Image (cartoon, rainbow, N blue to C red):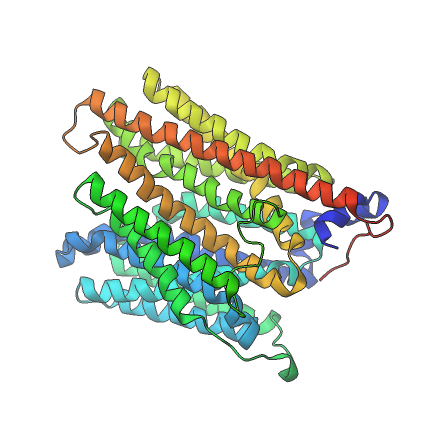
Length: 494
């Protein structure tokens, strides 16, 4: 019986299990693990903001403006591929060796990009950064239920939300200061000391499995290549000259994904959990939520700042505040939810997340339609609160409903699927905007009509995530009611 079903059926035991405290994360037995996992997340979060701020200066120096988008595309593609193979690597080599090797790959990519003499070297460095960080993020997720008792897992996700909020504020500021007063290379190189600390902590706290526990690694190379090719097609669709070409690339990418998933289900060593994307299993429906929520939110992350600058004459700093507002709302809500003592209440809030996301996107739609910019900030607060209300609990639930044998694959899939959602969303909304006449020289009415179409589609996708969120809860509750009485006892620390 899965932990989620046990938690929903337990009463006094469940209450005791749920009473984790924030202070426990800072106690000696958990402090190193907390710092390690947060630092693993920080490598990804800060690197994203560092590079996005410093890279344009590097492009000016090298004159490779046409390759700017590829610096982000290659990073994303290889981060997703790395995340997809992380569970197999962890199983075969152990978490410690996998994390150390991935961190060294990330560091190698950082050094290559930092010392680059042209954009090709920067791209090579970004490729290695993405591959290493994809593995690090996925394995760190998989380690959460291993390093912490269940009562502290919500607090760990809350701590990671704080890291993301800090990165959203401090990342661009630090990178901007380093780039302006020193060099864009300094903004890249600052990752190196962070990697060194991370590796030292991994060596100290992550145990290597016994020799007899190791298994042969079978890397599903063809499926990984196919999966990466699908992501690459999605990224390429954003650079297509017309809507028909973009749509064609998306259709081919969808066909590649469907074929790869079907092939993976028949394979003896799969990348995905066996119930992945099934509409009759809580794991499958929950993974749809993990994919669709970032996909819907991509409508705002791609076009919102541009809309504020173009339609309402906001400056870059004021327009960027909308993204910071969303990050603050996400982190604040995540901390509040993680502080709730009732696990059952946190689980019931899962469907609230997609609902708030949908309402927030409705607010963005009305803002564009009515020309009222104040609704943008209200919508961003609602969107952030939606992710904060459900993301940590949903991640924990999906780990818990997985079998022990598949838990690593599920955990590693979560950050990978989130990145894939943003990538797919950027492409889908790019097709939508371009089909409605979006381009740099478009008039304000045409621009408004294009953005209106983008946010309406975002609302539809958010509504789909709400459907799957509600269904996930119903499936878990149904299994809990059907379970024999007496099995509903909480599992202890992993």
